[in-house]
Amino acid sequence: MTYGDIDLRPVAALDEETRGDFVVRVYQHLMAAIIAFVGIEALFINLGIAERIYDFVAGSGATWLLILGGFMLGQWIVANAAADLLNPQRQYAALFGSAALYAVLFAPMLHYVFNSRDNGGTTVASAALITAVAFAGLTVVGFVTRKDLSFLRPMVMYGFVVALVLIVAAVLFGFSLGVWFSIAMIALSGVSILYQTQTIIRKYPAQAHVAAALGLFSSVMTMFWYVLRLFSRR
Image (cartoon, rainbow, N blue to C red; front, top):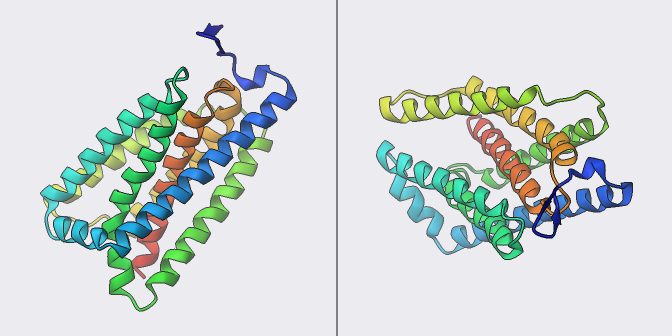
């Protein structure tokens, strides 16, 4: 099956060299998105933009819901753009646009961690390291296991829907989502990474490396958010 001049067969149906090249491109683009996120976030912090975003959302559930709603709309837009296999420029705009969206979302939390704790930098670095180690381990498991992990898809979908409902309810009614919620979200993000890692090979065509990287990037950033949230509560 083709789409324009693009072969839509999953890379699992192609030769070993093509599969290897595809996986390398996926993780190269994932790393590029992470570097872009770090660079944009550094600009936000050094230029005082992160502080302004923090002041905008601090103490106001309505403004935080506005930021969250804008983020979700933006993620929906970039996901659709990344799926446009006939337009590489649109795919790259989606990937780096997602990095910018996550930088905005993380800005108030990172401003708080860096400025309310003596060891804020250590906290962020520790959270990043734990996330990286967990991602590496889950990636290895996702690639080497022969078990079909497609059964995880409903768990991921409904899990994130339930999490979103709880987050909105917490903001609207003023109750706190405690440590166990963070732990549950870290676990759910891990399940998502496992599912997506296997899906990359089994479902994605060779030209969909940017879309595959975008999906992994979202799961990695979600895990990092909740690991950081957990560490900052200590």
